[in-house]
Length: 249
Ligand code: NDP
Ligand code: 8X3
Image 1 (cartoon, rainbow, N blue to C red):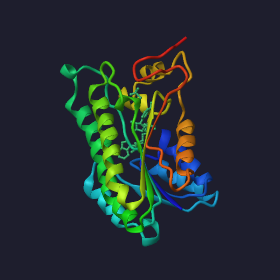
Image 2 (spheres, rainbow, N blue to C red; image 1 turned 135 degrees about the vertical axis):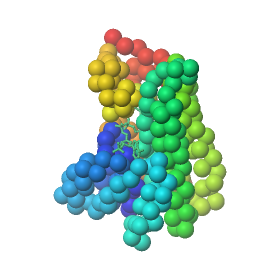
Image 3 (tube, rainbow, N blue to C red; image 1 turned 180 degrees about the vertical axis):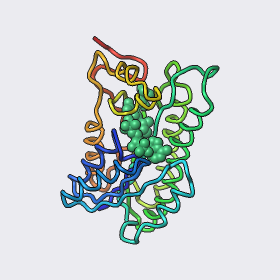
């Protein structure tokens, strides 16, 4: 069994890679930070997992195409695709927003997910099996103040997931979406452009989700019987009710 994970260098993607490796999957791990991919490759290979590193930026359509086209035939038999690579950049009003931040989010969260899916879905269709898992967000279900463009990209992931499920239906390919609430990863550090104090503040006064929590859910989804497809799963920590409401100490 082969799982293809985008954004495996930190957070959810890293935890999902480790977890699916434990479940017996061989892995194609992707991301921009080459050294982290090599470290993970070494770690997993030492445990007997077959790993292939694919180092590219999901915003670069040609790079995505070249990387997937270049996979040796046996690595093209992808059973699970986890479309995880993504980010928030900035938190502010529309009238003060940065074009650069907006482009990064739209190009990564929406277009990157589309490029990868466009190239891997035909491989799954050929084999009449596969499972695509898109990482959405509670930000794709509701909007919150200053979340505008990030929320828009995750609403797009929500729509794409529903539409993909229809497209994949005749071929027996499952499409699931996981929509997490606040989880402590590098997400906030990236959102606040490297400001660690601001990032740490996001997770004060409650226990957020972790990457491992999301990896457990992925493991559960892929273990369902062949005729069962979990379409959409929203998960928050106990202290969060939805994208807007927290109970913090
Ligand atoms: P991290 O910042 O820890 O991880 C993000 C991953 O995405 C990294 O591996 C990064 O790899 C990869 N990535 C980002 N941009 C690109 C790019 N242009 N090309 C290739 N890879 C890229 O954050 P999370 O683990 O939290 O985020 C993973 C997903 O979960 C995202 O889609 C995020 O929107 C979503 N999410 C996060 C939540 C949270 O609270 N943490 C809650 C709900 C959803 P590299 O930098 O090496 O390229
Ligand atoms: C990440 C969670 O609430 O910061 O998608 O948007 S949130």
